[in-house]
Image (cartoon, rainbow, N blue to C red; front, side, top):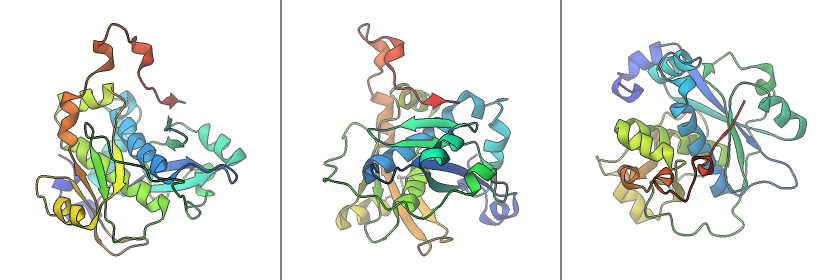
Length: 252
């Protein structure tokens, strides 16, 4: 059972946890917005699928507590020494084309480590130097509501929510196929007509934000094509591609 299947009043009554994500943003060389969104979504999936988050793993209880309440995520930014200190805490760094996002095991809402508590939530205004292009037709697409003026940090959290809802909706075999291929996905702002289509489709995972920060309550992200992951070609099935060639997060 996911937290989406638990009545809202029960979720609100449960101890509240948050999944911290820190994006590495140097003042002189910030990452592109779309790459940051996609890397954050993949970071959530890496955390959910990590052995330490499952069964009797060292993070499993915290993950269960977090999923039993609202699936809160907070994205903060770090650079220089701040990033190095954050990277020393237990977590996983996931790297995109040019973005680094470190995801940490869930923590109580008021239990932030001092190295993360001091980091800024604001200041994650990122741009795409050029149009990101068409999404990969073979992988899931996380469509963002075009009517919302969310900061990059807020949108990264929403993309993470969308990836998590898609993960919950998959079979064990589909999850393993997605993990084995490095969690390919695309995040794009939906054209108005496309958003109306996907947001109204009852078969698709749709994120409904509670409206605690930046925006009013409502739909923010819809995920299309997540079941396609079951037919993605697995790199390890090719004798020319060794296991070591699979995309790997940096652990620590």
